[in-house]
Amino acid sequence: EKTVKKSICSLMASLLVAADLIPIATGAVVGASLRHVSTLKPLLPARPELNIALVNVVGSTILGSVYGLSMPSTSVLPKAVDAATAPLSRRATLLLGVGFCGSLTTFSTFSVDMVKLLEAGALSRCASLAFFSNVMGLAGATLGLQGARALRGVLLK
Image (cartoon, rainbow, N blue to C red; front, side, top):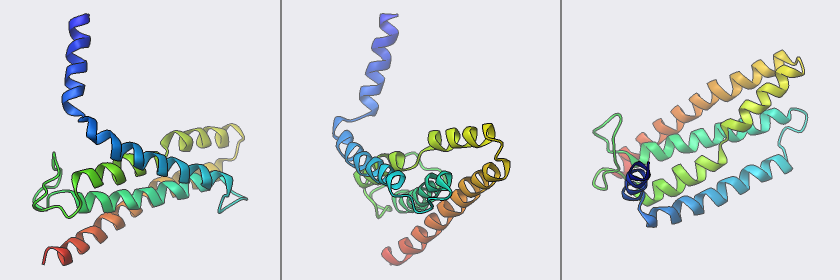
């Protein structure tokens, strides 16, 4: 058991460079703070469940853009950022994608909101939340990705 734990810790240490924690943590503080503010000052006070959905859609759009600006242009599902073909650096990707978007968007809150609506018998509100979060989130991510690809075309010329 100790050997397995040691192997896992060793693997994790080799995968996560300590310097990577700084941009991740910095982005996470900002993203989580903005998400918290969005619950304190909701844009849609009559539909509180849609506030987190709106934050998730915005986060999905930003993450789509980050993905489009950070991945090599030659691969659909790249394994790593290629500095030669990616306008956004690896550390910027960690800051914006993993840290900021990871803490700004929240699947867990979405899930709890869905359960609360189902328990309250608010099926139409639950359906609108599911639609808005999923369909609009995918649309936002696609829009962000396509916008980033267009910007890449301009930047790489």
